[in-house]
Length: 407
Image (cartoon, rainbow, N blue to C red; front, side):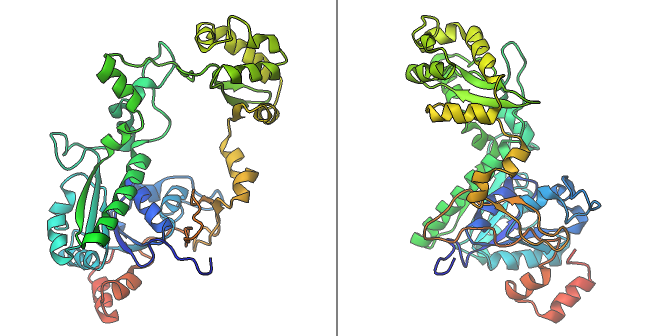
């Protein structure tokens, strides 16, 4: 890392986020080198500090959640009881000393706490502030309660997820959270560029609902242009066949295969040991393959079931076929390619020790982007932040702690 600097080195972020969307946004900023100070309280611990997985050799504890420790790597923790006016005053001082403020409460919560944008811009005119609420700060639904799982059906994603003749299905994770967090990080970077050029701060109003919809515009456009709702069709794809997850040899082993065009189908047929299928009228074109898709998938499964997913992947990839093992979590954690890229990080944590976590999914040739420290224990950086960022003396900090403001 010698000679390389982090893109956001010297930038301070006051992080009033919780659960997933907001912390995922500020995680990206921490990866880029910003000093991210997460404002928490022991009187209402973030739910993610209470979620598994926990190390199997340890009892439950608010500093031991693998979930929290994943999404808060590289950050600091300041505890404040924001129900106390003195704590709100401290928070304002922190915001005045910060370049960015991030929050993902319901619309209006920060205003009611006395930490809304109009208040904060009065103490820091060039402040960039982003709110990642469920439905945005305007509109008739702005006051409604929101969680990521609800964003999946609300965005329309569930309506196109599931098997034919099945009801709408959930997609496995709360897409509204990470998509909102990533979009939020991009918006913050854009606002910082604007500030660097003009000296102007600004308020960013992000809707997690809207950011969830950005991953399926084809379904929306299908309706707006043609009045047609895309049907649910399992793992199949309207423009590729075969396309799906196919049973392989072994206990619950599977392989994903996608044939993008007729030339790829001809190569795949040779892999099957049946090159004549490349010209078979039932399969030679996409239209024909879609018409005979059940029969097609039976042929594919007969071949994949006789091979491990790794062996099938190696053979198909050698032929230029898009195929790969449907990886388990263990497969991913032990993958040699990811290890070679040093994707995973194992940094010392004061309670759980060095545990493997997912790191930064990009590399920059001239910039230092990495996980700089493990996730913070609750309130671990309170004194340091108050002293160095907010300008409090040791005596003042001791007095605040005695009055139970710093909890």
